[in-house]
Image (cartoon, rainbow, N blue to C red):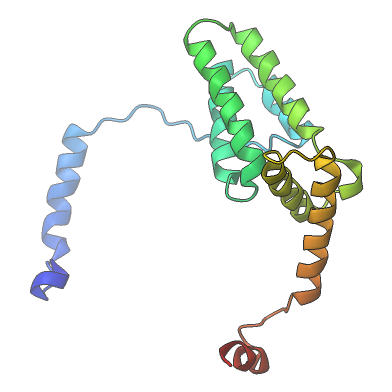
Length: 181
């Protein structure tokens, strides 16, 4: 309304009415807030699995929500992980998997994905993300040594970016002038 008629409605008039409507018609029971689970940290994941206050299906859904939160960070890794977890949850819904089978399958999937990173890449998350992206790109190619090529691409990409990185480039006038010229 503000954009079209250039006037602001007085919200104080409607606040009490809206509160009364919400109190009268909206009923909420007990709310349980779920926290994000770091699925790649062994200690945190084991504590999460040992919890007795939530069901296995809730655990799988919570893991799926965590994956959706992290998918922007490393899309090649988390997209594949998300697809496999989705298929597992669907199988559980269709009664093809019991609760214990679902839990075992989630643990197995997690272990497979956790051990997917070569030791040459160290523990640098940025290099690992570059590696997974390069590997997903190279899987469509017919090279024999895709993993070695992906490792080399990841390390080279990280080195190039590390050489070119400039801290506080938005405040550095010489960099800004160079950018606009």
